[in-house]
Length: 582
Image (cartoon, rainbow, N blue to C red; front, top):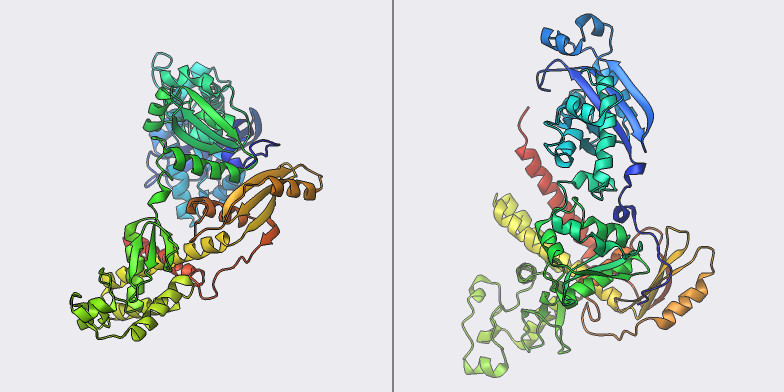
């Protein structure tokens, strides 16, 4: 794959949201008490700011509908006469939510203010928009020391940051003071390398001395999409990751926003950061998977052992059976997989056994073994779940009908398994045996998901060459060449350039990939699924397809959505059952 050439910008998720472009709505409430359950809002004040500039203000008194306690009047100066002509919260709330739409809410002691706003939404049967929330009190505890401020009250912080407005327990004045406190805290957070909203929200405490000491490791990292590798003093990979903007991502490891204990430990061991610039986010994702599988870095927990995948195999014996294996061979057997674990493969096998009465004994069964009487006694035959070929009760011809049916199931037609499972589930449900019905549903789900995955991967693996393009952020195109499911080349087309020469050059220099056996002959299942997800994104254009790209007409994809809907409905029922009655 090409590792140089013009870089394309990553997604906004990779880049983060720069704080300078975030719209904050700093809000403060005055209320009749300290609990949203038995108190009401008397005043709302809010200030909208972005990039240090005030964009607007919102301020109104609110009729709480109940008497204002005398001590609240003393504290805030809001009297009963002041709110008599004020609107009720039902009229104020829509205007405030519109004012704060698409913004990050900021409040001092945010749980208090958010609790009242959520309660007001619930009382009006209005959904809470669930915006991101920043608590300046909590942020101050993380950024300031006791030597600087004795506490994190708004009045204390206002004096420390010398705010232009002095807080006085009136909503708009307190919101204005909180704006200045927020700006002071953002400046302090910037000294710790916090530059995006995501980093600010995950900020927990100051970076460790080791993180500070090793910030220089990020100095030479380019601002491009690619893969980064933390290495120890011997050059052994400790951790492999990917990003659409390498410099921003690597720098985050040396800031307070990185709180994972294992990663902080890794930073202490790391001596260098090696980077591989990639032409696209897909190439970076694939390279990451390959490097993790090849080096198995100790601090990576995901994708380290793709070789542990298992397959369901219909053996090529005279009397075939379903076996769970770790390797696909050219031995005449039929394979379904890969499955992520043996347990899931066993559930899928049980679903097939419920539909087809294959033998479940593990011995190698031949006509000589049967005639000699050395075969074990078949217990399943007494239950009507096996024709007992091991005892000579079933001829090879009769058994071969079951084997062919199982082979058809594994290679594309899942209808027999689905029909058998659904009939059994319905019968058990009618008998109120719900736990057994759920167990059969889980078996069917394991089979359908595994079969759908196998059919998608097998279809992609059968294509000798697929060339696809997607519009890039800079106006050009991302290009990828996929051969037998493996990403063979990645590149890009500059804006306004004719794509044909670039496509031809990329195809000419792409990795040679020969066909192989099974659903994942030349790439891991995770890599192929990355490619399939990219191909399924909006805007992708197929430039060339050398082969047939399709799934079986009666394959697992046709019922997979039904399975997922069944699980979703089940979870909703559980959720509803767990809610308190009103």
